[in-house]
Length: 166
Image 1 (cartoon, helix red, strand yellow):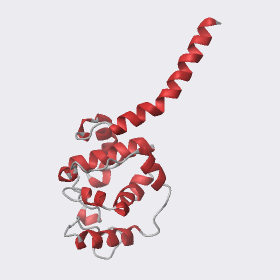
Image 2 (cartoon, helix red, strand yellow):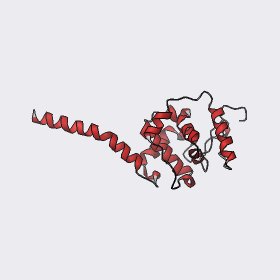
Image 3 (cartoon, one colour):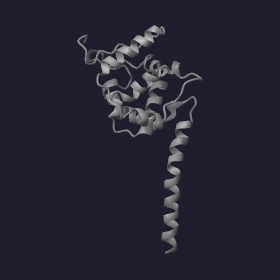
Image 4 (tube, one colour):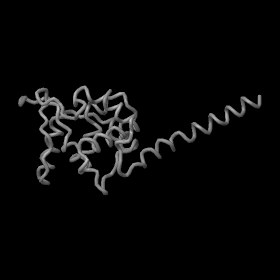
């Protein structure tokens, strides 16, 4: 009886602390998101099939290059939502905390110049708030964001998936 009670108490304590562990991991790493081996593994399993291991994408298939480009979207609130809501991210098997970790890893790996002191890391709460909303037209959303970034003097990688330009 005493052992069962002790086990129940430990289980309850671990369940109560689990959200704090996720929050702590999200808040750490004001600089080095690349230290997450789990984010690397999740990228390889969930993203690299299209965006490739080197982030170069598949231009002949309309899949954009992440290099010196993906981090530009973090400068706009709608760009951050776009990164969360694109079908490959929003519909991945990753939970919200895992997706936030992968998004931070992607920016750090392929657009390290955008990890500045004012970089706001993706969090599970931000991912959870945006990912349920599906795009009616991803190309239209990307085109609008590209225009906004170009107006700021920034040039994201071309995105032609779903267009006639391929």
